[in-house]
Image (cartoon, rainbow, N blue to C red; front, side, top):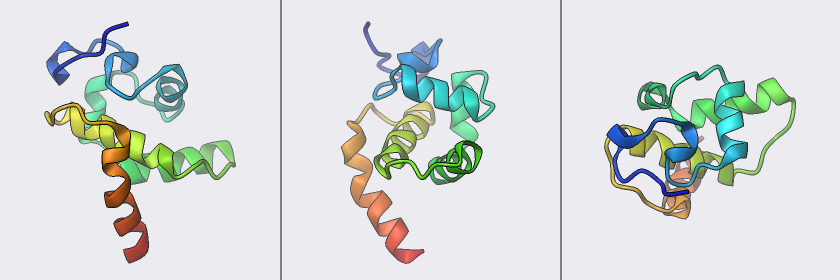
Length: 95
């Protein structure tokens, strides 16, 4: 399945680079109904809400995937999820 090259091409969550069925399910679990809604979201807030909803502390790399998806839907070019790891680590260090 080919991934979208730009946010305007996205029709399903799984069209977003780095997003597979599990992450798409997480977005739906979080109450998101359309990929375009991600453009107004914060990846860190989504992660914390997911942990609250599920009662599980998910792997911090999930934050990276959420950051990548939000950034892409805000118009950024597709980047691998690990591109966001330094941003996540710096933010978590700051508290």
